[in-house]
Length: 188
Image (tube, rainbow, N blue to C red; front, top):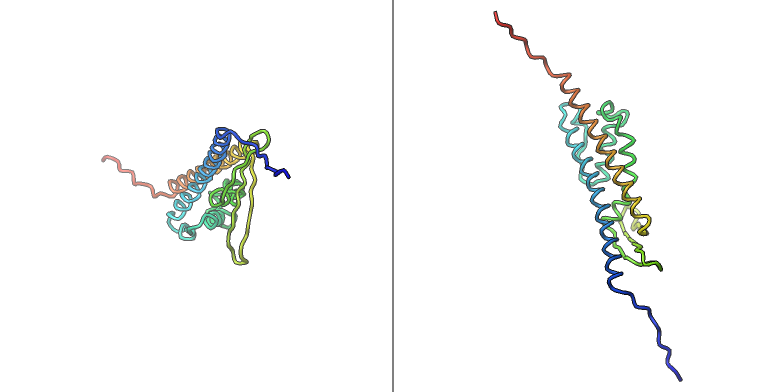
């Protein structure tokens, strides 16, 4: 009787290493872009909170989802900074679409695989807890989808940065407009 010996193809380690590095580099770049957006939200909340009077209505909570909600509450139609923030509502909403992606990229466990053409595929699994128990998500991204997704993230953060700049400029112009006039002293 002959024994059956499984035949497994070998993969060049250099190919595997390059693919793994490329996948992890994409992931780290995407996380960095999302962190830039998170920093913009945090700094804007701090700026709004510091405004005398209206700023007291702005919450400063710790978790990102809470901060995104707090900024939205501050700039929405009936929020304390509705006038200055109207330019940012849609851009903030667009950035918020990436909340699930952010959580998965930052906290998920990734496995990198190769397709037949030796292009990388990243499978990221995340188990999160909420009041109803465990919530499991899985994200699959391949090398072809990665670049356009990163470009979209970069554009959304760039647009958010622009909107935060517009809010800051509007706050400065309001402060300057409301500043008391200095008396004019004339020589006698």
